[in-house]
Amino acid sequence: MKTCPYCKIEVGGDMQRCPLCQSRITGQEEEAYFPRPTELKLRSFFYKLQLFIVWIVVIVGLGLDFFFKLRIPPFYTLHWGLILAMWLIVIEFGILRQFKPGTGSARKVTIMVFILLGLLAVTSYFFRFMRLTFAWIIPITLTATMVVNFILAMIDKKGNAMAYLLTNLLVGILPFIALYFRNKGIPATWIICMLMSVILFVGAVIFKGQTVAMEFTRRFNM
Image 1 (cartoon, one colour):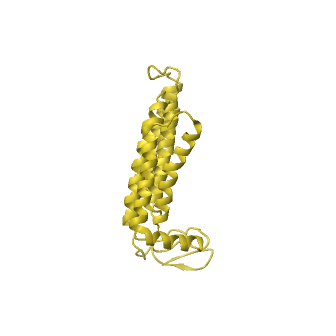
Image 2 (cartoon, rainbow, N blue to C red):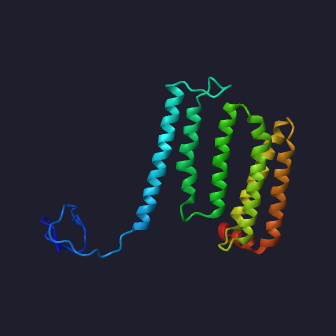
Image 3 (cartoon, rainbow, N blue to C red):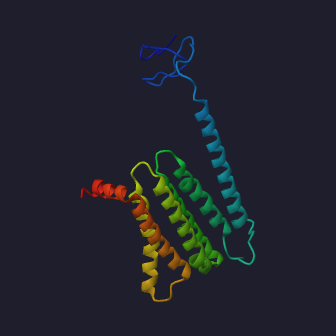
C-alpha cells in the first residue's frame, strides 16, 4: 500500500497522488479500487480530436484568406475566412453543446434552429442572397420547426407541452406582426408560417387541453 510522506496516511489502489495534498505518494501499487472510465476517455479523445480538426480548418482558412489572398469569385473583397470561422466556432461551442444530456428536446431543437438561422442571415448578407433567405428559407425553416415542436408536444410525457405551444406562437406570430407594421407587403411564406402556428396551437390545445391547463396552473399559480 502506498503512503503520503507529508500527510502520513495510507492510500490504497493505484492512485499516484495524495487525495489530500496532491503530493506524489510512495510505496507499492495495488489493484485499482474502481474501474477505469475507458468509455469516457474515448469520448473525450474523439471530442478533442474533432475540436483540433475544427481549429486546423479555422486557422488554415484564415491564412488562405488573409495571407495568400485566396478569394471566392465574384466576391473578391469578401473575407470568407471570417465567415468560415464564424460557422465552425458557433457550431462547435453553440450547437454541439445542445446535445448534452439534461436539456429538453424542444429547447434543443429551437435553440439549434435559431443559431443556424442567425448564421445563415449573416452569411446571406455578405453573399448577397438576403432576399431569398428572408422570404423563403427562414419562414420555411420556422414552419418545419413548429411542426417538430407540435409532434414533440403530442408525445411529451413530462408535462412540458406549454413550452412547445408558446414557442410555436412566438415563432409564428411575432415575425408576422413585425412585417405587418412595416407596411411593405407580407410574403406568402410568412403568412403560411403564421397560419401554421395558429393551426398547430389549436391542435395542441384540442389534443393536450387538460395538460396545458394543468401547466398554466402549476407555472403561474392560477
